[in-house]
Amino acid sequence: MTKPLSNDLRERLVSAVEGGLSRRSAAERFGVAPSTAIHWVARWRRTGTVAPEPQGGDRRSHRAEAHGEEILGLIDETPDITLAEIAEYLRETHALSVAQSTVWRLLDRHGLTFKKNRARQRTTTP
Image (cartoon, rainbow, N blue to C red; front, side, top):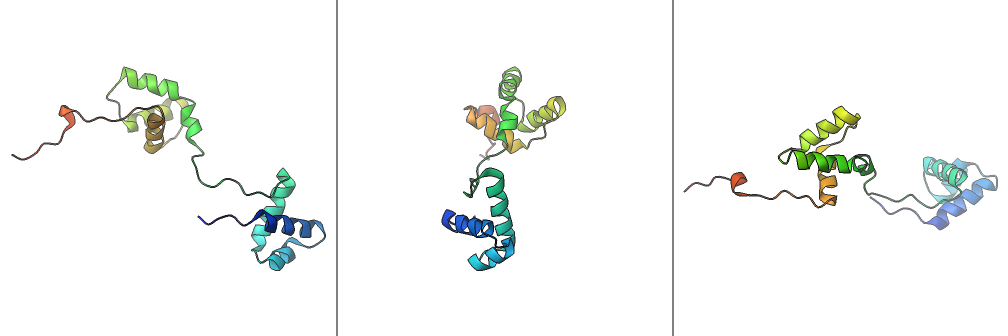
C-alpha cells in the first residue's frame, strides 16, 4: 500500500472547502481526486480530524477471540480436532463464519502449536 498523503494537505483542502470552495474545485486545486476530497471532508465533518485511519492489521480476529476459552476447552476435550472442525463448530453453535486461518491465528496467539511426533512423520523409502 502507498503511504497516506500528508495531514497538511488534508487540512488545507478541508479549510478551502470550508472557506466556500466546492469539493471538486478544491480537489483540482490541490491535485487529488474528487472522491478523495469528498472522503476527506466527510471524515472531517464526522470525526473532527483529517488524520488517516491506520492501515493494515487484523480487524476481525476479535470475533473468534470472544469464544477463545470455549475453543481452547474444545481442544482440551478433543486433542486431534482439526482447524476445519473448529471453524465448523463456530459456524454451527455461534453462527460465526471464520476461515481456518483465523482459527490458526487464534491458536497461535494462545501459544498452541502443531508438533510433529512419530505417528505423524512421513514415511521414507529405505
